[in-house]
Image (cartoon, rainbow, N blue to C red; front, side, top):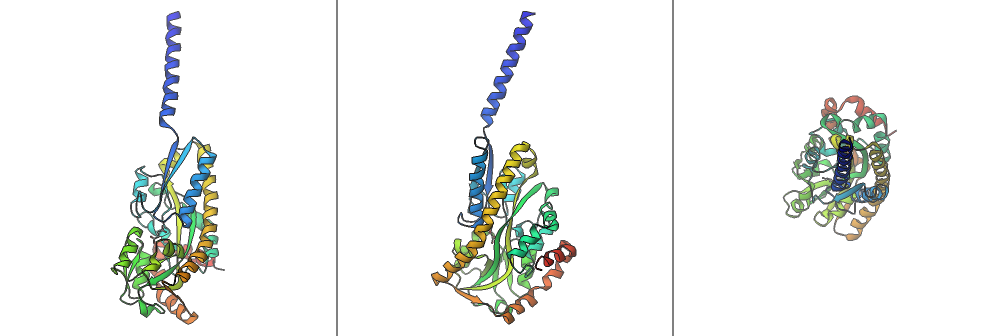
Length: 331
Ligand code: SIN
């Protein structure tokens, strides 16, 4: 009997040692957060804030490693890597999800949103929440939207009316809607990763690109693009995503603390986005490297007229109800 009890105690002690040992060996949960932009951008700042908040609230339990500037994964690889478990979080531009869902193409429709208030209103509506869930069948969880802002057209030549873009080559993100948008003005769209844009512009392999003030400034596109048309023709926003496998595998309390930290970091990033689009625009003007072209109402309406047929082209894939709901957010 005594021998039996001694064996049981020894077994229990051994199991306790093994459990403690494995907890110690596994260490904190590591979230690798990969993105493609500079640190001094809305997304870069949001990711750093998220790291600070998580590591304050979940000290010793969760660690966040942020990889900016395509250091870990570029545009077209991050979601694949997430599904393989090589990275846990990212915030790709909404234009970069088309391999996983066609629904998010709505955010690329030209001239759909009149300003960022309308974008925010739509993203926070029921339809906006529905779109956050559109990746679940593909094993991805949308955790929230993050703003960057409205896009401008930069070019080696002045662009005032759509005819000025005819025959020019523009780099675009990997989106068929963006391709159709440039085809609508008889320009040639080229899908290229963000990390290649500066060199493509500098070597004149392409004539122009579309981006927000903060990306044009932080990646120095304005230094190699003599003209920027303030077109505000489209949106560049992000979805913060993780894999379903990683997210569902988290302890519920930890998951809820991470989500709270993310919501706070997104609110912080959105404030930065609004301020940066004003400040970085001004810095570009002050640099005198690039001339900013402001469109008259008549010139702008020519762009709208030329590009708006793209809505109809993608109506089936996106859903008319979705487009109508997004359009109504302008009211
Ligand atoms: C980004 O802001 O994440 C990149 C945008 C782009 O590819 O143009």
